[in-house]
Structures are given as structure tokens and as C-alpha cells.
Image 1 (tube, rainbow, N blue to C red):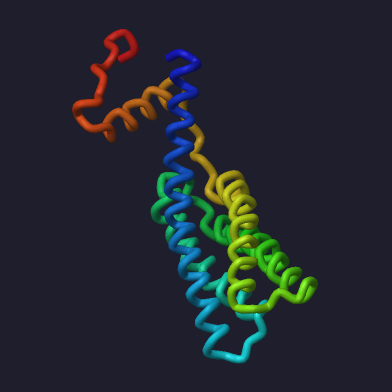
Image 2: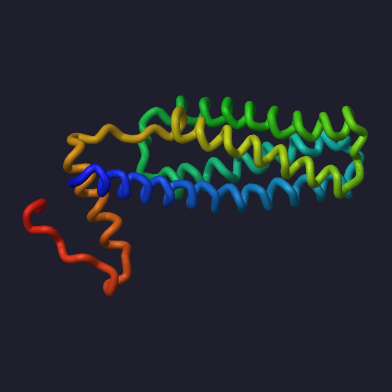
Length: 176
């Protein structure tokens, strides 16, 4: 396989991972915002406390989505280590997320419901970049490949099988 083909395959796999991460994250965002607004409007909790609770509800939701959908093919040994790291990096993301909201609320006095939601979403966006990097690097580790060439060929076959029949390319008999 050429370097260009290998790069294309890796980029396609990364794009799939980002899409799955984004889908789980989008549902997690809905959970986070819904719980945040529910707490804001039905309790006397302060803004930052409501945000922290909502974030941790979303973190639990996201773990299930990431483990059983986004990263289901990743290493499943050492669940205690995985969950510990997930919670650690999620907590760091929560600090980032809540820090933005805290700064807006108490640093600048922006405390209307609209402003709180805007800065909550900005904080989530910044924290999401950190979480994506940390989860894929440290939490949901890639299984070691037995051999690089076989892995690239298997990845190509995987991607080829998911293309519509009319877009499929005939296999190269030299490589197979």
C-alpha cells in the first residue's frame, strides 16, 4: 500500500472516530444542558453548582456511549484503570467547563439564563477538545496491531465493506 493510501485510510478511520465521539458528545450535551436548566429553574442551587451536577450526569451518560459504541473495539482489559482515568480526565474537563462559567458569572457578572447557557456551552466546547485528546490517548487505548501491513489491509477491507456497492473498487490481486 502506498503512503498516500495508508494516510487516506488513517484519516477515514479518524473521521469515523470523531463522528462517533461527536454523536455521543451531542447527546451528552443535550443531557447536560437539560439537567442544568432543570436544576436552575426548579431548585435554588447556584449556577455553578447546578452546572457541576449537570456535568457529572452527562459524564456518566457519555461513558456508556463511549465504551459501548465509540470505542467498543478498543482494549477492554483493565476496566478499573479505564474508569479511573475516564473519571479523572472527565473531572479535569468539568473544571475547564465550570471555570469558564464561573469566570463569566462571578468575574464579569453575566448571570442571566441566556448568558449562563452561552458560557456553559463555550466551556463545554473547550473541555470537549481536552476530553477527546485525553480519552483517545489515555483512557480507551488502541489494541496493539499484530503487524502493520495486515492492519492497514484489514482497515481498507473494513472501509470498503461499508461503502455502497456501486462505489466499491475491485480488490487488487497483487495485495491480497
